[in-house]
Image (cartoon, rainbow, N blue to C red; front, side, top):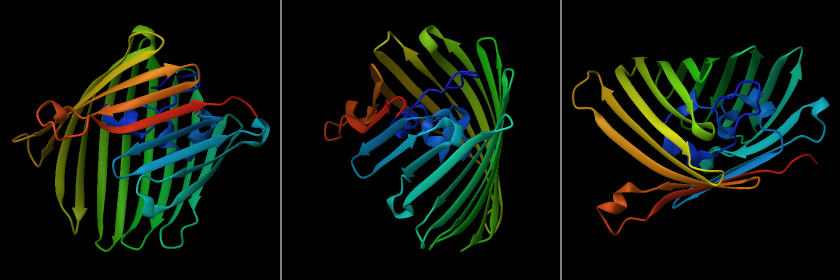
Length: 279
């Protein structure tokens, strides 16, 4: 959730998998895409556990004057760990990240600037892996207008190996703050790929994160994806629940298929984040 001028809310992959809004909504896991955001999540840790994957990250600030350091595991274990560092200089947040895995070398750079009720972020990531070479450019703008946030975003992925193609993604999200710092959102995204792969897709998503009280959070994301045209769209709905206990946040991604198939597990994943204060 975007709260300009206030430290952004923590989170984990479990929370964002339920909301299905991608990096339109702020969350700690997106330090992977925007290393400069390490400055927003000082002294936090998160982890996720599902039936077949696990990931975690920890961000610490021994001395804010000298910046913030962090390490996190990619959701795909074969991509290894990332290390990051960010510092504020002349009202800009600057961040770098890298993965020391020689088979999947990854390097990232991000810069962000917050002014009045607006924030601009730009990042560049390059990935040299065993199966593909990818370069990603992102630019994201957010503006707070009373109880509303508006977030336009553009991303470019250029894959040079094993195929050569470019994927452009253009999107816009509207977010309305509601009771107890909860929110509802509605967004749309259009992407097109040109080169050895040529596709067009449209994605419409919306949802809610409702804080019933200081302890209990309900969330649900709904999305519909269209390939090439607005015919035969594919619907998705993902419910979730969260508990807030002091500086701990415990999240569950619920499996709605359990309602129709008793063989399915009740939870898709479990997430935890914790703000552990200053050293």
